[in-house]
Length: 233
Image 1 (cartoon, helix red, strand yellow):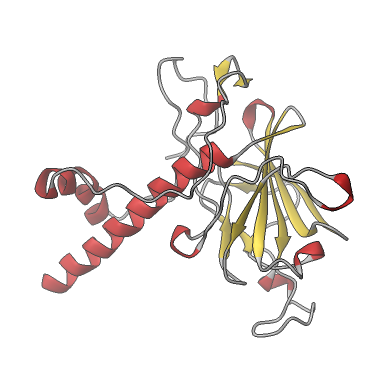
Image 2 (cartoon, helix red, strand yellow):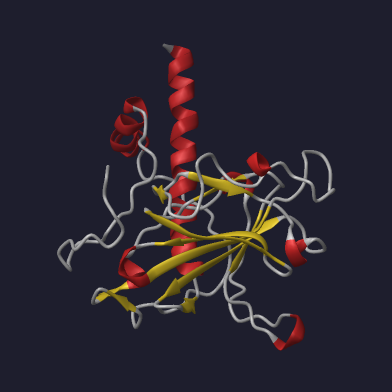
């Protein structure tokens, strides 16, 4: 499973970034369930227009071919395509807001190295990860509160995942922090402002996140099915 983002695979192959390894029983279900139950029911994907990303290339390949790990628990997260929407001060939104309860785990979307751990007035607590091919992912408004409060006095263990520091290598799907409302998110509800950048330029992450969301929901469904089978056994 030690595959790195943009690993130089042939241009005809879609590069899949590894999520955490599935238990053997679930791995078997991934293959068998469609055969047993027929075509799976459509998975609901958050509404929003699909952006065209094929004109953005990384290592001479369309970035639309990259498959990310979803950065939060998909079953408690909702989001829309708000790329380019107006924000205060004449700004435009340069990411996707992944709304979820405070303290929901936040995961790295791909293998990479932590390059930024910072606190700022607008972004609050945030992390930046550098991936191969000039790709970066940013995670803003991470938690800053003790459990059950809005006191802005979170223990560091309630902000960042274990071992997360600048220079640390992280794998796709690894815990890096927790959803919060730090920075200017205090009045908009707990969420992660997620940005994806290529060579320093922010791009609309929604199409890639929507696909990752669909995969994460399906894996969660298979996990529940595996649990039911365990009970029968």
